Every structure is written in structure tokens, then in C-alpha cells.
Image (cartoon, rainbow over all chains, first blue to last red; front, side, top):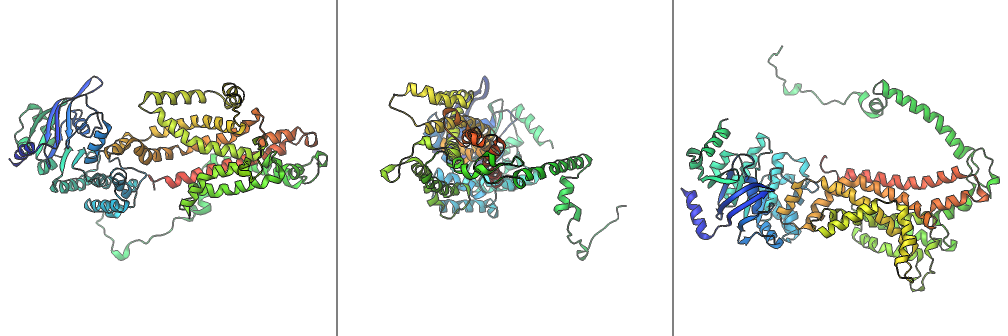
Length: 257
Length: 370
């Protein structure tokens, strides 16, 4: 349907992220095996799979938090190599939200949000603060700006983390299990923010087990197992008509309760 | 039992203060001094010991004490003899510094406070200017203490530096230099570059592995052998270099402990936002690592400050050296208790201040749990 069309037209425009024959090992453990993946501008991809399947490792390769040994990754026209300048150029354009938030505990919420714009983008302080307040408004916690992360709930912290990434005005956002460390009543507030973000046309790669989010927001769902992409499809097809046995088993396990 | 129940708004219970025996002085005493028979027994034993010790100490130090006199024969021997204070106090403070020039030390000491203020006090008025002053202060102080630049002052040789002035000079210089040196060594030890890593490891392990006295001897006897003959490095500078090297090796390990306590996620978050190595160290990692390391850092500072007494092995007379000299002087023979108590008070007041300040700093920086 529309999602598959997006994939095709996106590929025609030249994908924002282009991954070719990606292989990675931890020691002798082959964690990513021959991954090929193109992501179009504005595409929203949910990656799921059992733990240890390499899904976090895959998105961490995209901003070079993990080094790959074989294959090609091109992000926003920049090829990732050992060249630190290239890596920094990619990281400026790619925001990342972590499972454990990773806010800076010694800085206030506002300082967390303005730090990278001021030091990396060289934005004047007043402007950075205005932008930060704008995004804190969008994640619905402007009143917490002067507090420290330790004073916030988990859901609030994760929303700050999202705002912090957005303050860099990234072209691509990576989410590494953003709701896995949250209490159930806080998951929704974070997902709501992510749905809002998706509506703005942001390119998003989300590792998550929130299948409701996947079917509501994703253009494409990717299922990984044992370091490989086993199946990818539109959410509709993926959930209602899974092709591989592994996918069926996985879905039956996570949707059974 | 479980009757349906509701409380009308006007029946809601008002707030009331906690029971009197759990708050205030009484509550504190109950919680801290008399919370159970073992604690009560310890409190009573401690009170008994204090009751025995304090009156006799006060009697010795003040009531029976002899305050004036020109030599030890003025002392009655019943209480402490402080008669030497009057005659020797200057030497304890200034060593053998020319007595008509001691105003220079006094000025340097007074200027120390505005130099330290912007680093120790938050939101100091005129902070920016004071920081500039802090940067020039070491040079200003050096000039005041020994300099004759432009012939304004008479030069004083560093051999004349002594007493508490010497302890403060070496101690402060060591403290100010060993912290940045320790930070660099700690980062160096974790560096990916083998050359830097190996240099740091070798430096830390070899300097930490020998006594400070050995280092001071080395600086005094062995170093001049390797240096060109007319290149005589000043004794006080040699001491400062060695004390700094010694303390920075300890400091590096203390800070490395702090660095290892920072979760990997902090490095990753900083990297993911595009911060470079030095930026993420300066803005993200070190502020947190140093905060965790405050107790260890201050511990090292205190150790360093007390180690300044070791300068005696290379012939400099710090406050302890002056005390030793006086105790063995025939005029004042046998007054070791008074002298060493006096010296101990000097060190204690400085070290205790550092300790209290570090507690204050820890509380101020504690953003996790407030």
C-alpha cells in the first residue's frame, strides 16, 4: 500500500540511509549478517525481534556508536568510515533516544537541551534556549525546564531526552527501545510524543516491542533474528499475514497477552 | 469490619506537628545518643572520658600555664609553658625570612583570599575580574615572596623561606598543580593512543611506588648530576615539582575511579549528539567524575599538605623543622608537648577546613537526590 510506495519513491529520490552488506562481529560472535536496508526521507521504520537479534546494534551502527567491520553505511550522503569528521557530521544530523534516557544528571533539563546546540552547532545561547523551550513545550514539560533530571519521573525524563535530541534539529531520529525502561502508565506519554513527531514527517527508526505504535505509525516493520533481517513488510501485512515461521512464532509470543 | 465509609470535606483531619520527643534537641538525643542500651552505655562512657580529660587538659593548657619568660627556666613545670610563643612565633610563621620584610608575606597571604574566592564561593560579585586576579596571583605571590624584579623589592633567597609560609607555599602550589596534572594522567591512562597510555601508566606506577622522601632526595642529589652544572634549579621549586608529581599520581587514580563510575550511556549520549572527545570530557564526563571523586581528591590534598613537612630531609625548615630546632635548643629544651601541640593545631585547622569545604561542595553538587 502507501507504505510500500513510500519505499519505492524514496529509493528513487535516493535514500537518506543506505546500508549495504553490513556485517559486524563482537569478537568472534557474528552479530549482524549481510544487512541491506534503505531508508527513505520521512520514512518511519519499526524494528522488532527477540533479544540478542542485533536490532539495537543495527541502529547504533547508523550513528557509529558501534563500529562495523564489513559493508557500507551512507547516512545523509556521508559514508561512515573511521574518519572522525565524517562521523561527527553524521552525528550532527542523527538524533538518538536511549532506553535508559542518558540525560546528563549534573545539568538542568534546559541545559541538557541547549548543550549540544551551543557547543556543536555554535548556536547563540539565547537562541538555543528559545529552541529548547519550544521543544520542551512540544513534549509537554516546559514547566520542568529548571529542574534536574533526577527530580523527574521516567516518562518525563524520556520526553526530555527526545526534546534534547530534537534541539539539534536532526534529519533522522533513532529510538533504541525508548519505552522498555518505563512503568506502564508512562509508556503512553512517551509514545504520544513519538506519534506527534511522526506526524511532522521526521525520518524515524524505532526499535521497540510496542506493536500498537508500530501499526499506528510505521510505514514498514522489520523483523530481525540472529543478526539478519528475516522479514519486512507494511504493518498490516506484517501483523496479519506474516510469512516466515520465526515471525509467526515471535508474534504469537508477544501478542499472546 | 469493613463498613462502607466516607469522610466529608469539613471532617478532614488537620495537619499537626510530630510528637515532641521525636524532633528538636530531645528527639535528636533520643535518636543519636540513647537509642538502645548499647548506645546509651557508649554515650555514658564517652561522657565519663570527656569529664576526665577536658578539665585536666584545660588546666594544663590555660590555667596552670606559664605565658611569659625568656627561657625554659621561667617555666614552673606545673602546666604548659607558652613563654616561647612570644619570642619564636615569628619564626614559626615566617622561618628565617628577614624580619623587616615579613610584610611581603603578609600581603601575599591576604591577597590569597580574593584569589581563591571565585573558585570556592558561588556567585561571587566581580567573579570575572577575580578569576583574572587568580591567574596572575601565583606570579604576584612569587614576586612578593622572593622577587626583586625591576629592583622594586629586595630579592630574598628561597632558602630563607620557612615556617608555615613554606608549608603553605608548597602545599598550595602542589594542590593547584596536581589536580589538573592528575586529570590529564587519568585521561591519559584511559587513552586509546598507546604512547599516551603507556606514559601515563609508567608515570603513575613508578611515582606512586616510591616514598616521597626518595623523590625529594632524587631531586636534591641525583637530578643535578644530569642537569648542566650552571643550571641550578631552585630548591623550593624542586620540592614543588616533586610534591606535585607525587600527588598527581595519587590524584590520577582517584579520578580514574570517578571516571569508571560514569555509566557508558553518558559517553554514548555525548557522542551521539556530536560532541568531540574534549568537549564531552569537559562538559559531561569530568564534572560528574570529579564530583564523585571529591572525597578522594580532598583526601589527597590533605595528605599532600601534611607531606610538605618532609622538606626537612633536603634541608628546608618548614614549621615542623622550626619546631624540631627549637625543641633541641638549650634555651627551650623539654618543651616538646607544647611545641608539637602548637604545630598540630596549625595543620589541623587547615586540613579540617579543607574537609568541611569538601562536604559543603558535595552537598551543593548533589543534583541526583535533592
